[in-house]
Amino acid sequence: MKKSVRWIIHLVVLSVVVTGSLLGVNSAALAATVGTPSISYSGVSNPPTADKPQSKLWWNDGSWWANMWKTGSGWSIYRLNRTTHTWVNTGVRTDPRASTSSDTLWDGTHLYIASNVVTAGKTASGQPARLYRYSYAGGKYTLNTGFPATISNNSSESLTIAKDSTGVIWATWTQVSGTRSTVYVNNSLAGGTGWGRPFVVPAAADPNPTPDDLSAIVAYDGDEIGIMWTDQATGTAWWATHDDGKSPRTAASWKVKQAIKGSKRVDDHLNIKSLQSDPSGRVYAVVKTSLNDGTTDPTLAQLLLVVFKPATGSFTQTTIARTGDCVTRPQIILDTANNLVHAFYTAPSTYVRGCAFSGTAGSIYEKTASMDKPVFASGRGKVVIEDAASPHMNNVTSSKQSVNSRTGIVVMASNSVTKRYWFSDRSLGTAR
Image 1 (spheres, rainbow, N blue to C red):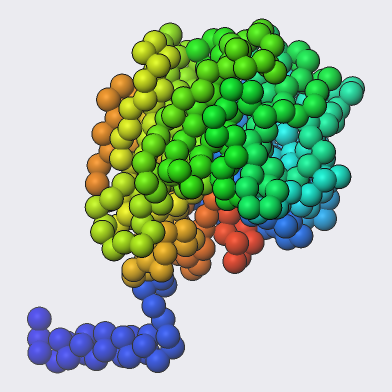
Image 2 (image 1 turned 180 degrees about the vertical axis):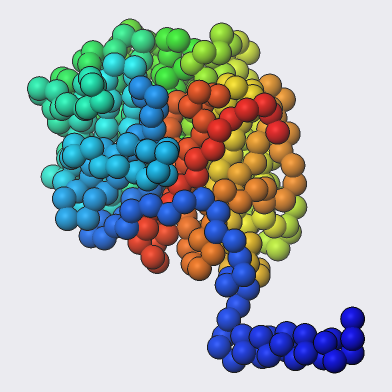
């Protein structure tokens, strides 16, 4: 190359660098967008893809569906058009209340959507949590007679549902009173109607965690219901189980034990899934610890995968991510095509230096490990959703259902600054 040409190239590069510096251009301008932006939203009180234990998506009839907030009309059922990479409003409105969050459950025949009025750190009466049930035919969901039904008359930070083998729908949530909260549960008659009076797990040794703690519920092992909740004051995650068909209000029908115990071993970030096709009935939960509080040690466990094995009644723990990874708000998905646990969570965007605190928004990352012997690689993992222009992605959500090569895997998050949904959609082939 001639010397004169080198000088011209040098001057052009220098000009770009100087201009970029003067205009305040940063590395975000050079970052790659990952995932797909979707509809914008406004007028909703809470991030529309929150909360941590809840699921907003489900798979049915060859498509992915979601309960999404539509500006001006409330929550509605959307279908993912995989050809155009767009979420399409079906015109079926669910809850019109802007102050609510939802948990969805597709059982193969009906769609259940539980919707709770969100209040963090306090509970308000006269704010009913509702259950909607829809039938599905010909590509359309229809609200059933007798719904919505009332689960509870109080607000809560979160609420999740599960269906047992007898057709009964169960729900759990926490209610705050003063400096403590209480873990509540309620159940319907078969099909989701006829809800009773909410009650505390009868055999619970510690049903009163801190106001910042949450509970979550899951059906597992063919004929059991399990409820997990955190108590940051004692560093404990509790696990209460109930056999289907037994009286839910008697202490003898429940078994309660500690799933996690230790100083700062839990936070209020909890997500739980079961593998219904698994003959051993394993339950998988991801729990965030508080080990980042008051320390600069980057090697401590920040996210734990906890696996419950009914045959032995034991729990195993595996570190998903460490305090140095600065991760938050995890969810897990069970992949039967590859026998993998997929862990998704928020961490600082790839173009952002440092991390102000564990809990800051950024981008959505993923790690995987074997369901049989889970071992997660070090680091933050792979970026699956990132807005190159706005490092404010958070609150990843997906489905209660397991995924496979037919469904692929879809996760959704939201950007609280740009007020836009984002999602990641990909096929599932052989294990990576």
